[in-house]
Length: 95
Image (cartoon, rainbow, N blue to C red; front, side, top):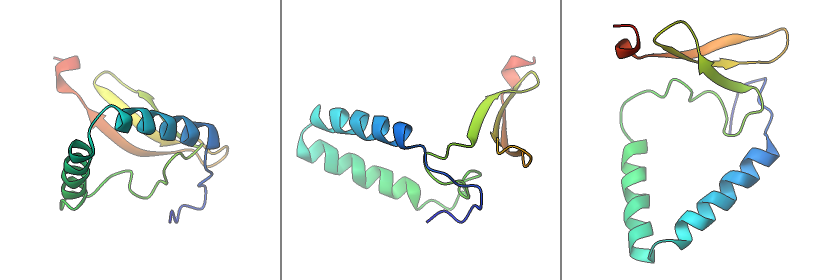
């Protein structure tokens, strides 16, 4: 469960994601789906810390977009409490 005090679920985004996942799952066999789930599970247990791990799934306030050249910024957009959560850098955009 998300412990962020600003977390608020976006039901429309959650529904759309569930529909897309159901369609994707329907496009493959049960064995293929189980193999993919195992692979995803192994990825989730990696030691890398998720920079957005404190933000809950489908949060209405999680926004992202381009920042300065070479930056892609993830931020919380709660009015009065806006803050940056993570910045990805793409050096090839600035070289």
